[in-house]
Length: 635
Image (tube, rainbow, N blue to C red; front, top):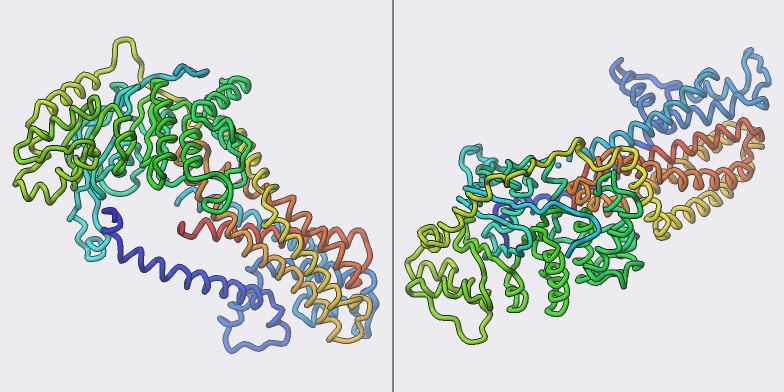
């Protein structure tokens, strides 16, 4: 169990229990509001209210809800048509009388207000979706700049949730303590320690990915103080969880990353050559046309996904790459394949750092240097491994009381055993203090001092823009990827189309030719019901089916946004745009089936506005679903 889990068990348990309940409640409330507020259950006409406040509340609810304008547009479109213009004895037309009887006595210009409102609500939900995502933070073809990363006296504190809830905001828990070290180009460094020692925490602090807590200390890149916006452009971060779009191929995943993360000055041919070279370096060229798929269900194996994660970061041509436990969850063979790929990347001259947890002998000895942390985030060893781990073994065996390693025993396992908390208590020593008094620590301090000074003739890294590509290229790239994902997702899109066809036939059969036989008030209510029910049930189905699909892509978006590929605006606008053709097809199918079956007025003008109202209603339901997903926490 990690230290982060220990710090927040109660809060996470509450979320796991409450989120399903809250989701069910919100869905039920959403349906209730959809049915109640547009005025089809409770009409303004003939109602008497006990107070002005009650009357205003009902009126505001009626005019402030999106479906109201769909109802107004469809009703006015129908009942102001020529066949309803016969005059009554009351000096008003039949159409006006019908509209007035239901509290819908609006003038013809409300066509435009209703249609504009529908379009406006679609825009509002789209912008809400975007804002929600924004505020939730070997020689190769392309040359790169080898860079060192040095850090001195790094401290990291957090305030536990239980402490904050009790109002003790000054009581901090220290997760990293006086961490000093250096990562160099071409050197493969292992970051090890027991669970909760702070391995991943150190990587996140150095990468600038910690959005909470307090960080102290000096971090320098190539001898210059770290600037987060610049550092994010030259860093590749391979997370422990391999998150990729399931309906994209291996090669397309790399192409997408290359388009958005390589400099805009690089031509397309060079980018394509670099993608192919990365595929060969990570040994993915044999499966480049395979779909990524869903973990444990289809597509790539766990080991192949891990190599894809590395390749997606490598194709951005970074100078420094962090990998969080790249071999966790893999068998010996798969882990060896991944480490061979990691070693290939290190041989290109990049700075590679991997957190690792109890590796086997072969994997452990593939590293060049080791930083070992103990509980509390203190360093107890930082230096070279030596041939067959000889340097590490000699260092710890020189400490009085530490038992010798057995023949053919895994040095990584032995090292973690002899430096455990229980071993410290048994020996009565503090390994971090022993390290701080050793010549090894002095050598590291001197190395950090040397690398903290910029080399002669070097220049600090600077990028004129936050992202490698402009907003238009970001949008086009995201739209290209989303279009591929949608086209290859028949369970999502085909089911929507089938639901539309079946629902349209059902509504057409239920309200067969009702538009041609309106002889009493009940017939009129039937027509109003057909308009309402058809759009609302299709809309709610769209709103609910989009949730799961977008939730999967949202997780991918978080990784890509942290990597500096694009802004949330580019992603969300592409997500909004890619839905339009499918919603258009749904609206056309609904129109073609229901309009003649129900017997609405046969005019091209009326058909167009009927289609427009249905299309906009489907859009705002869909975009409301997108916004709801972006507002909820990741499961």
